[in-house]
Image (cartoon, rainbow, N blue to C red):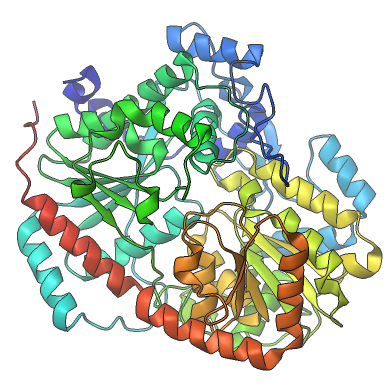
Length: 621
């Protein structure tokens, strides 16, 4: 049993440490781990980025591992000014962002010229009107790795009533409750501030508890050097890194040290016999320590590639020391399962959406207008906020949820192409923008909206700020007539319930929903668009063909790098509204049958029942 587990998270229990506010921004300031994969056929990791080819990076890793060094400039104890893109994050902010201030930020971005905005970024500042935020710095990477709990909260406001399970689902849930007894199911991931996994876990936390399965959620945070390593794993699992530079022993040791520290923190919450579901590569290294502490451990990997190559093998080789430790595994596609994993202990469970959540519940046309007017995307006519009471919010709440970059507001009734995703190279927001300018813009009056979370808020996603800035720069270089039809929306990272209403409204306002990923494990935003009766266009990568049946429930593009085909398919749907309507109706039915949370809830319940029948792991000692 490791020293970390033998201490059983005593420090975490004694200190009551929670999330380090503002640490996300500190990650960005370090300049370490920026994964900048160019779009196109030459996808590769640039030499010297997040590898030991960078002498400064190698020196930092060596200092961290022998205890003599500082993890990065971002890890000093002094607080230095930085900026957040949407709103203030943490008690150190000298100017908390009121709805009026955030609205002013949106307005200022409309008025600030492209050249001035670019000059702000070159100086490391944000555009005029963006609220300032002082970020709390970390003291040490390994010793201050944080584990904190995301509290379970009810659906906000006057949410739709959740229908009780019936029939086979009720029986499956009953069997799981009986098997689990007084045990708790713990989900552990690396961020609560955005992305598909966080979306899923908010749904799990609510619906599993409503179903009588006691469920809790922990987040394991760390400094940027750790997430630089896991981001390399992310790209390599998808087979996109054509730089064959292998992982170094120092990177493996740092990963092991941080995940062991995380395991100690998790052990402070978990009781012997509890079931722990670890999500994605950021958490796998905890598995042996938590099993030694008496927990039953599942590893769920939301990433995967349908093919294997030297890059996928490097990723699985890096993770190999920990891959056999979990009691069970969950993947999103059978071909994502690596050969090193025992198939008898593995389940394939497709992700699903919660139709009762703020992101997917019904909104009427007036509520959609309220949200889009409130964030400044559309002209604000001063109509009353009909959603505040239902959402359990105070008047004026919407303005703080997003920052919009646009030249002019979105006109009423204009056709809209929408992509919702993180600012991640593999989501290819830049490709969508290129295709819009090249093919889609020929449709009279069509507008493009690209929405993603505040990139400063995604703790485990190095490079988000750089991708967002590249999209900004690309937009600014467009001819004015096209640029005026492109809108960038960055939603607040510290209010996922609120921003879920924004995404919901955007999807319901869209004419066509796209997800032009170069690689994709599973596209939740595709499912969300289908649920809202919107036609979808996406590439035939990863598990997306499980969601979109080409020509029946949406449109698939064979080559994810073919911007012309992608643009033509979207354009044709904009022009052929009858076909778009047929696809949208079939997509909604397909989603209702296969991709709602009740199906996923039942599959997890069956797996939990099976796991409870396994022989007991080592006692807590």
